Structures are given as structure tokens and as C-alpha cells.
Image 1: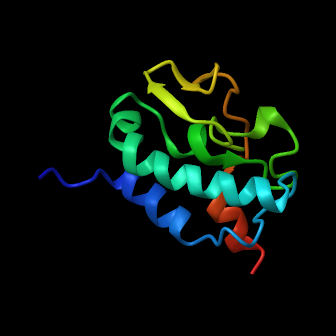
Image 2: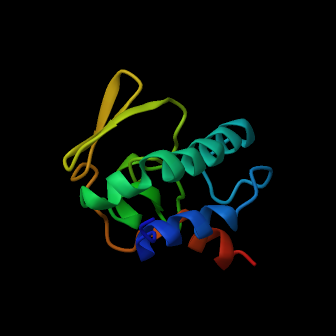
Length: 123
């Protein structure tokens, strides 16, 4: 059995540090966050190794604006918010529902943080 890469472990641990019942940032409704949280954990379990091997990183997947959370889409990683099934992960995009989220769109904005870091900063 291959050990998980550090990045995939970070994703798993970061998401595990969050509660599905506590919205960690602005821009998410409680029901939307609960679903996003569940789906992100499922994504890491099912697609995490493939996403990592394809070059996806923490910010590209789970990044949010430190001030606006998910209000601005250009400050959101591909899985923020996440309310539809993933059916494919490539080095260029993730197929979510009937659409695709590109790895380079949104472009990583200066100051983006993983959603679990933002939640920790509120403590």
C-alpha cells in the first residue's frame, strides 16, 4: 500500500478539522456548507490521489478569500462551494455535474487560504 502524499494528508486533516454544522467563512449557507464539507471529504477519499498526481494543489481545490470567503468566485478553489458529483479529474480540469472547473481558472489570487486555515483564524 502506498502512503498518502503530504498534500492529500493535509486535505484530509484540514477538512476533518472543520464541522459540517459550523459555516467556516462568508458566502456559504449552512445547508450548502454541510453538503460542501461532505462532498470535499468524499472527493479526497475517492479522487485525492488522482488530483494530486494530476498537479492540483490545496489552494486550487480548497482556497477561499481570507476576507470574503466564497463570495467572490475568482477567490475560490474548484471545490468551493461543491454541490454536485465529480465524474472526472484531469490535469487541466475537474468535471463537476454537467460542467467543468479549470485548474487555472480561477487563477490563484494573492492571499487565498485553504478554507480550514480561515476557520482557524476565527478562533
